[in-house]
Length: 146
Image (cartoon, rainbow, N blue to C red; front, side):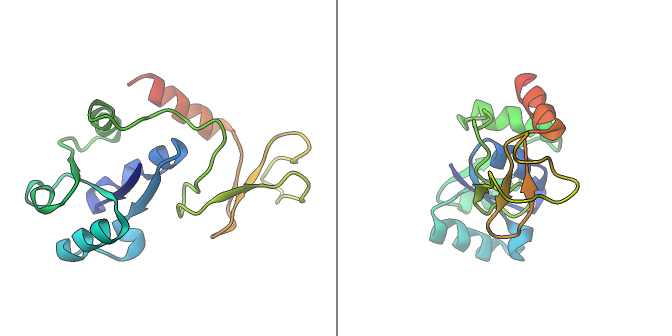
């Protein structure tokens, strides 16, 4: 799904991106004004995810969340039909939403595993490195507990 999270729903970013969704976040785009937020959603064909009732009523396509808690928000999204299963391979950067590419033979930074030992991906937009480490396991456990 192509989603646009308003400023109140930023805690969902990495979860949804790790599930393979194309997720734009309003504050990453410098968008706080409701009219501009609605325009971005419309122009990019994104479903707006918000906790703001009047804003959701003005959107062409919106998911209204009631909870402040990220885990509860994930439950609400699942109940609304948003697929929340980890992708087999990461496809989106958790930080910037850019596309990831597998780097099978490139040297990695000291903090990242050797690609000969473990699959490693890098964001084409921001250069951040990803692998299925403890964060991946934590997200899997969180999603399984919903």
